Length: 416
Ligand code: HGY
Ligand code: MN
Ligand code: MN
Image (cartoon, rainbow, N blue to C red; front, side, top):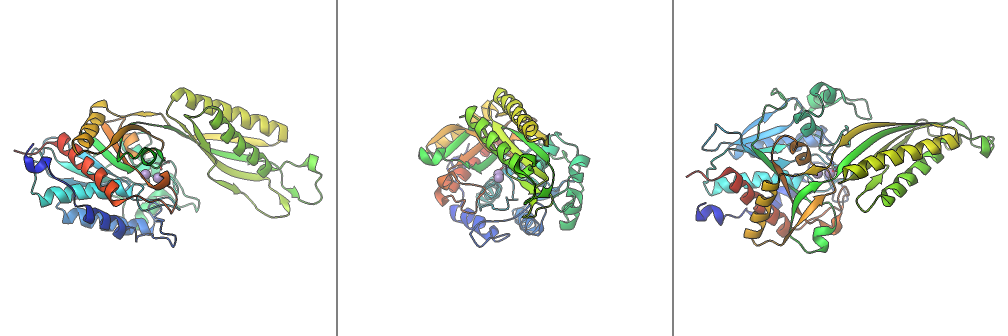
């Protein structure tokens, strides 16, 4: 590789200001970002992203689920591009970096190559995947899951949010139901940069996480059917209280994850009482369970023990509990050669680094089932994410972007 290419560094100030400029789309008073997928704020950032990629000389394609692909031509257009990118949607209590860093650092890589007039041998393609967060519409990593065929496009288009709006209607409402079929855009490989969303890199003062694996995920939709009755006149022993039932289930999920730990986690993130009233014993509740492990056998144990606990609680409390497994994402093992390429780039750039498993799910985990994939992590403050306090430093973000740049150059090659 030429001396110019091997010494190339991204423009740290430009990346940092791009991250903070786009944070205005959905900015919250607490300094976070609320940019739910396919909502008005997501449209604003998508429009911005498309214009920025076109200004960087890319052809931008949008598929039927709104996945965005910005193609930078390479010398050899006969081969599929090396992919890089992440997602621009956020959680309701999201921050400035989750997904955003990986997508905007990918754009920064293109801008840096343009500034240096470097043509890569293979083309590059920056992706913004639709609905990675899975908050408004389930499942998470939705756009990339459909891309790899885990769900049909028709199924995903029909998914509805809490207000009954479908993915199809939401895509149409922001004008991002693209005309290319899902899966049309091919890749030779894919690299995703992301904040760790956990405490390890910061605690160990490591600049780079070389991600070699990722936890598997189980998502359940649950429904408890008890019996509404008078909060004052119903004797305690006759009550069939759906919220008291859920309270036991919540603690059971936590207990089981701790028992099966340290390589297991679990939580109930949503709970909705059907007809809440302070003087009515709750009769019906919808809830969700998210439980994960990097070990498939532990995932099976989580499933089996949570179902058994829910059944025991339901019988004892004379209520019905239905648990519907919405999504099972097996644990991820990233491509060893690509993981090595990330590690080599980090070492050659002089960044402290360590191998790490991703606790969070990512689009890269889906893509990994169809092509060689690896991920790069950088620390985030106190390991906090999915919280408006989410924060990272400019040097760490720049280090991650430089490792992304040099990993992509190693994979795509530099035209002679
Ligand atoms: O749920 C996840 O792990 C990701 O943040 N969507
Ligand atoms: Mn993310
Ligand atoms: Mn997230």
